[in-house]
Image (cartoon, rainbow, N blue to C red):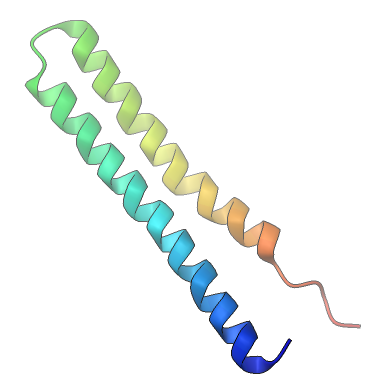
Length: 75
């Protein structure tokens, strides 16, 4: 793999991890909107669950992607 190909791959992976964070932030916002506009307790619980799951995705998925894509140590 040439340096240009490696750089293009690294850029693609970076944008994928950033995209996961953006989707997680949008999900957290969506959960807050649901919880804030809800008049029933189960709507508020659903919104809270969406927020918590979105925050979990933002915390775990990019780190897992980075660990999977980590370069092997050079010998």
